[in-house]
Image 1 (tube, rainbow, N blue to C red):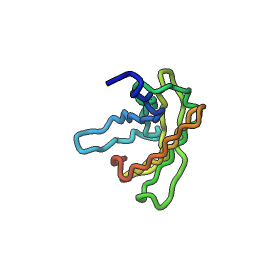
Image 2 (image 1 turned 120 degrees about the horizontal axis):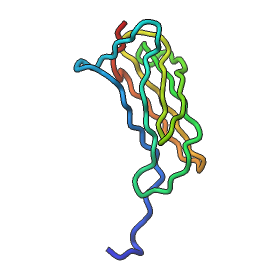
Image 3 (image 1 turned 30 degrees about the vertical axis):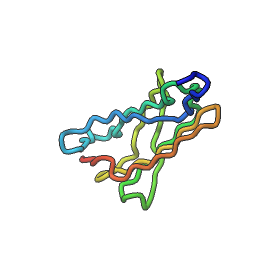
Image 4 (image 1 turned 180 degrees about the horizontal axis):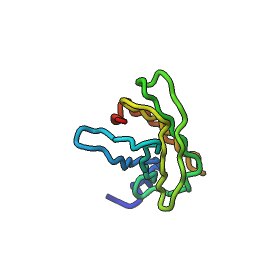
Length: 117
């Protein structure tokens, strides 16, 4: 294919979740500590990468009827650590991420995993 026909990759933001679930897709909450997980945010391979400047995460324990803010803290390498608000049962997540060039990602996952106490 001639090089003139190739288009650069779109600056799509991708999310990769790292959650320590067991074989039943459960996370055991330990004492008063919040349930936490990491999410890596990156642009599609080959796309121009702009820094991720805004990340918010919300959690719901009632299948999305009500949402509460989670705490998202940036780390090196495009990783963010998220601490969920206290709750039990199936947790749903709502993620918003934006970069400095105007690309955004809005993602909702209903019943992502189960939080047991």
